[in-house]
Structure formats: structure tokens, C-alpha cells
Length: 66
Image (cartoon, rainbow, N blue to C red; front, top):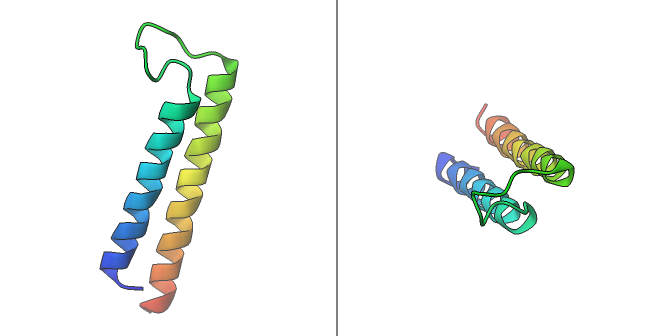
């Protein structure tokens, strides 16, 4: 994996995170609404998935570029 590929994978993770939040968080389309318990759970879950994808991509990059 090269630096360009790493950047592509990280960008894909960010795009996926953004899309998931907009589609799964009830107030993402209306700033007047507030987050409910489910929204906080979903936000935490999607944040974890995004960070895990980042971790995996960075470790893969570092392993191939020792």
C-alpha cells in the first residue's frame, strides 16, 4: 500500500461515516430537532466503525512500508 492508497481508504471511511450519520440520525436533516438516545448510540457506533477503518488502513500502510 502506498500513501495515495492510504489517503483513498481514509477518505472512503469519512464518506461512509458522513452518509451513515445523515441517513441514520433523526435530526441530521433538520437542525431544529435534538438527538435522542438512539441517535447517540448510532453516532457512537458509526464513530467506532470509522476509527476502526482508519486504524486498519494505517496499520496496513505501516506494515508494508517498514
